[in-house]
Amino acid sequence: MDKKADNHKKKEFLRKYRKRWRKVSLIEAQIDEIRQMKISLSSFSDGMPRGNLPSDLSAYVAKLDEMERELIEAKKSMIRAYSRIMTKIDALEDEDERGVLIYRYIKGLPFWEIADLVGISESTTHRKHGTALEKLRL
Image (cartoon, rainbow, N blue to C red):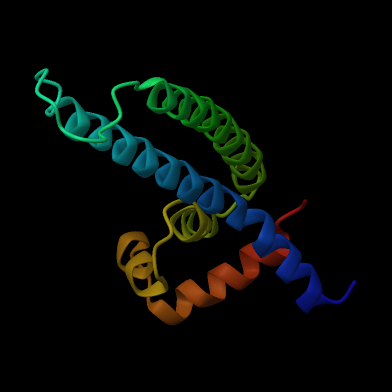
């Protein structure tokens, strides 16, 4: 496999955590939205006739239960991805290379911010990123 294809494969592996993190965040936002809808429906439950407001909230409860189960599975998947990725990153000997990969793929930070956090120039950050990818073993 050529170097470019190998690095692409490694980047995709490293990006799995952030993808799963975004999925967890999206599910949490959906659950919050469902809960807000329930709260707004509950505020109309004073016994006064309101036309066609749903009085049975079983669909709400079922959807909320489904979303909470999906959230649990998404969090498990995120944790597994984190564990696999960190095992590979922790195997790198160079502390700066580990830091660059963690800040880039776990924290999702841009290179200029990583450079500031690690205490190296942005060009060195890019170079450390490339070196770390070369050394990373999947």
